[in-house]
Length: 380
Image (cartoon, rainbow, N blue to C red):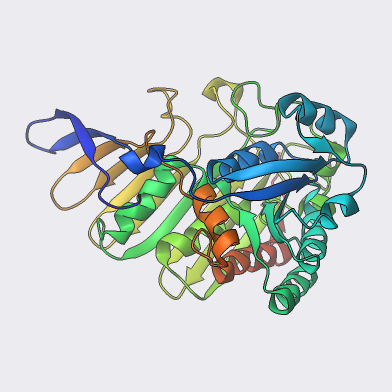
């Protein structure tokens, strides 16, 4: 599914520049019925990311059989979307159900890793919303439990797994389209109250959203997405945080909240820079103008993930420049392989959807960036 994807040319500009516009065509295999079947449950739905996680597992053949939620408003919305799913009174009812093979959770961020440890000790695999781990102590316990149980501990880094242009960028890089990757730059603006678009913040944010002890801090939380991408696209197996900083620049009523952060990374196979913020204005028309730049020895890629600002509202825009030409590729027909691959991993005891070592390294780096960040104050 990930190789030989055809592209249909729309227009070819004359010299100079040789700009080609293409539309990616999904392979016939993308329409095939799931090859596997598992039963899974939801244990915590504090963030609406849970719906994208469920959809991914269902695409892979997962059957949602039970759910538990700790917040009445979230549980009410969930039951309206999934009226036929059994709602249980306690987490233990899910953990003790031998028919459940996989547990998904997006409960309060600092509670996700302890839950995952319990899940694995009950002989089940676990898929957490990001950040899947918020402290080094949690990380050590997760690693220990994986070694003891041989269960899967996965984190849904959706800005790579569920963004079609990001998936296709991986295909192109594996094909050598830009040579060896030198650096990634991630620009990841977010919006606290989303008047348009949907990334889980369309209503008033809960109290835990403002508390870094609970959400992990800006670099650990939304920054974990970007660290995952840095590791994946550069292929780095070892990496460190060179520098990081955080700030609260426009939320004095929430003194512990962090609305800006950035970090510099150095890996054994590439370099990286990440900028994060909560300053997306309403005029954009969606929750954030997420950008990814991948520099290679023979070219570069830019992804405009969610919008092509001031041009069009369509996302999944990929731009590729190499030695011969500049190309724009509409990636909206790209299949999303994570769900089917992850269900297959549960069935076959493999790690094809997500490298377990890379998953936990991304979490460690994001935690370290947060722990060691310089706190910045700017004069008004």
